[in-house]
Length: 350
Image (cartoon, rainbow, N blue to C red; front, side):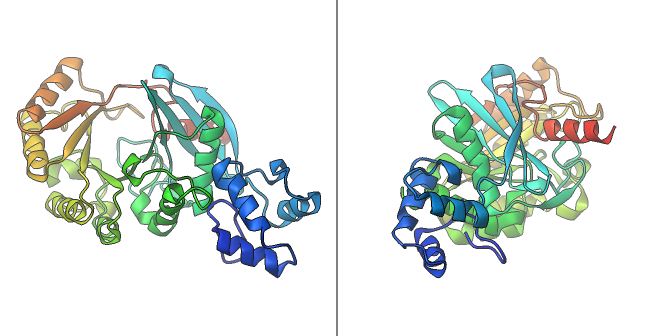
């Protein structure tokens, strides 16, 4: 992938790499060898590409150093999760999570440093948006996950730090590489990749216009605008009615079932009557519902009781075809999105 001033190996196409090598007097057939390392072997460290001449490896190290990021913490969490805290080349940090389940592994990836949405119950946006991740940085997250797991994942969810649809250009390119045929990308099925959004309607419409069969998960968190305004600040919040209409456009465009993500917060959005309304919305759209118990960040919001959670799930299930309660993989720093990064920042400030 070629930026304004730099060439980044993760995400580059064979044609782009061939042109770059020719411009610098290198043999063009090396492009396919390098892409084989990047995508077939998932090896981004140019020093490890041992079928390349030493002189070419040195050239790549000096002109396209890769990887540009490194894992500074690998923290195990309950349920077998592992959270990687990744330091980028400018010193900023992001997180990705490895989430195991019987017979499958899911990678949860970030798309931004910080988050502009700043949901009031979420650590990811506590300090707002720092910057977008480049495509190569998103792919290096994936690379670090593969190194930690020892294999490609079965599924990918872009539900980490950031609002991916506000970084659509870079996210779209990363999606294309993840699902491109081997030799040009990682060969993953779009149906195993989910993009999450807080309900950013213009981005949802771009996603719909693309028409590719990636999954979309919408973090709804409330069924009416009054409650939603207590959870999501004004600048990135769209009316529920507009979000639901955009969901329908996305589903019509790519034929994939929408998932509603709904974080349950004690005495704010966990009334069973709200659950029934959520179930009705899901039935109307033929959508799935994924319920998540709030993971407290600063004591402002609380997790509902187990009884309250079950009552809400039962209420949704009166109408929705599919409703699940996300298995809680812990309230540790290794599981709660954004908390490990926040803890490191607070530690560095002391």
